[in-house]
Every structure is written in structure tokens, then in C-alpha cells.
Length: 79
Image (cartoon, rainbow, N blue to C red):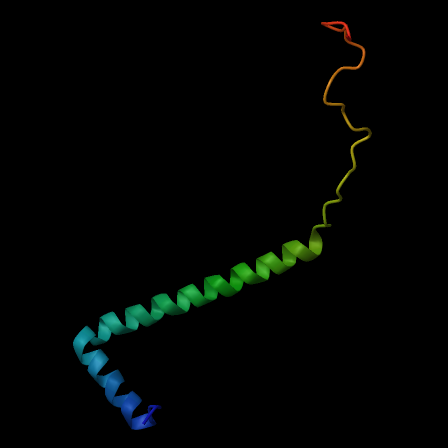
């Protein structure tokens, strides 16, 4: 009851072809195939880039910058 058998799938395919028309159905399947190909190509290019390009290194700063200037003149005198 929960799964479709081969005859069910064939009947649904025939109904889809009749409703959409043969040319439109084949064009839609062609678009799906192009999408899958471009996805695979993109994944392959991403893998090639990751292998050929070295990972960036994180460089530490030479020294921390203070939040205020220690050498500045004092505006008011301590009490």
C-alpha cells in the first residue's frame, strides 16, 4: 500500500506524457539533465580549486594596540 509498483509508475508516466505533451516532457527532462551536469561540473571544479590552492594562513598581529594613549598629557590632575 505504501510503495508504488512498476505498473503504477508506468501509468503515471503515460498520464504525465499525455498531459504535458511528448515534446514538452522531453524538454523538461533535458533541462533536468543539464542541471545535473552543471551541478556535477561545479562540484568537480570546487574540489580542484581546494586541492590546487593552499589554505590561507592566519597571521598574528605584531603587537596589541592600547585603547588609549599613555603618552598624552593629562587633562585634569589627580585629586
